[in-house]
Figure (spheres, one colour):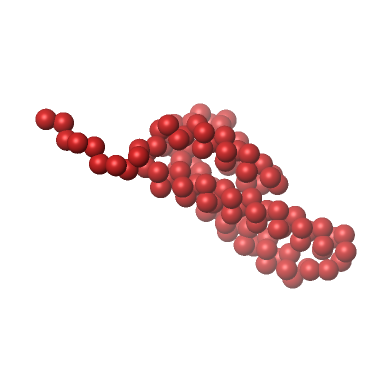
Length: 110
């Protein structure tokens, strides 16, 4: 497996998790303090698009790592639970890191 597959998953996991926390803060402002209605709409739409990209990258990583369905489902859903993506990402990286090719060219076998 290429390192780029893991890297783009990690980037999207962090971006999705941060945007979800921003969305939660906007929701508190909207429903708790009756402000930021337009900002909440924009942030929710941005998070939705980024979450779809996260789903694609997580599914790509899971299919290349040959995860069972339950594990893949947990990784995909973690982008909807505030702070869960941070913890799941760390666990995934520890598991996938040994499977990643270094990217250094290997000598040809004769």
